[in-house]
Image (cartoon, rainbow, N blue to C red; front, side, top):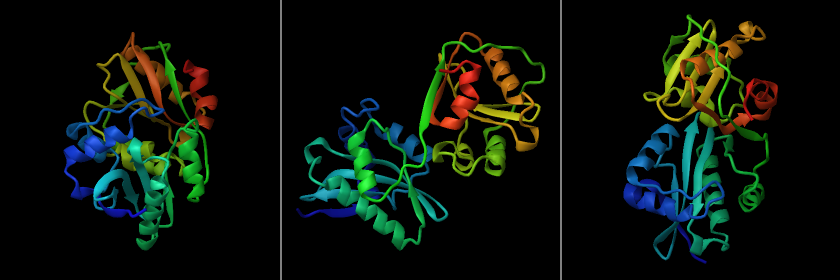
Length: 263
């Protein structure tokens, strides 16, 4: 079967959003309804480069896409989808192989991605292409966290937290919660600090607040500062539900968050 490839920027953003929506129909993580405005914000947040991202065409018609981000010699497959009528025809493998070859030609040394392990079809595709499973990522939620008012709780800046995360964060943090990604966050996300502990949260005016980052520099760990900051945030925004996206390495979930009210 004959396929062609082209850079994703050659497709108008409205058409790319429509292609995304069609490719993610009945997705295991929930059906995605994408429009140009939503897609543009996703591309900015995920640092997607449309000149590196690719479309796969069948009979001159786009049937799939691969969105690529890059940092140094590492690239990330930020999203890939094939429209339902072209699935089961090796289209995804052809597209992924093409993206990997382009990364090699750019002298990149690794490519990373995340996938739901329940999406066995996708996992098998990635493994067939040479990807290896590195770690499990978990999501958490809490109907209500125990709160305790702290007069020294201070509002900070997402960029300040991001710089600390670049310096002190673990090297294997998922791309979406790395310091370089956090640096692109702004309003309505908010950042707070208490002593040396720092956190970034989503819009606190919403019913559910997402804890995007919680960091205590190594010299100040095991002193309860992270727990105090979490309780202070819960007190500052009472009657809220709290959640952590499914980007949390298992060691942090079982070692910290599950012990503090998250399930």
